[in-house]
Length: 197
Image (cartoon, rainbow, N blue to C red; front, side, top):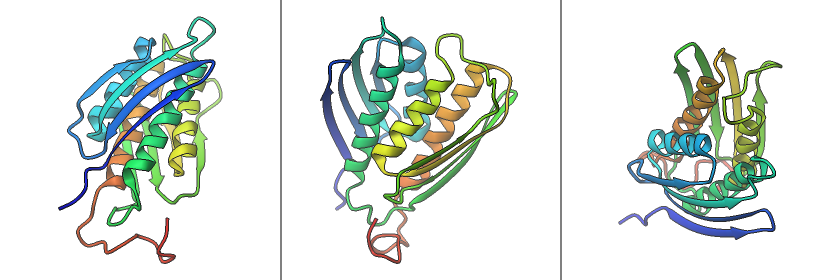
């Protein structure tokens, strides 16, 4: 019998208060409240397309700006995913997704290597979504990569609409992580020649 891959974290700072639960082997059910409606929309997509059950309550200093809320929520999501994965025995480890959203195409590649790195490539002047700066999409990905301790590559291949661009990145990240976290019955132990991740 396999253990459930779930984790719950609370994180409080002078800027944010976050309570978050994730179930890697869920069905994409989410309850999201970050105080930023567009970010809630992105996390709902992340949950649905990653098949992660996700419960997020974030209270942040959104009157200052959205940066702390989005980055800190990414930190806790990364922490929870890392905890829920445990030793990573039997996982696929790698995941890749090409994600189209109307005129936009994004590529996201993930290695759950325990070597945190984000490579984020988007053209200068990439448009913002109406209610969220595009730079915060990168900050979210960086927070997830650093705290999940994953190697994540995100590349915007092309796109014009800021909403579609953000959505393609969040959905692509979800699908790539879904594949990387998935258990593979042919994998014995930890998927590394080092026998550790």
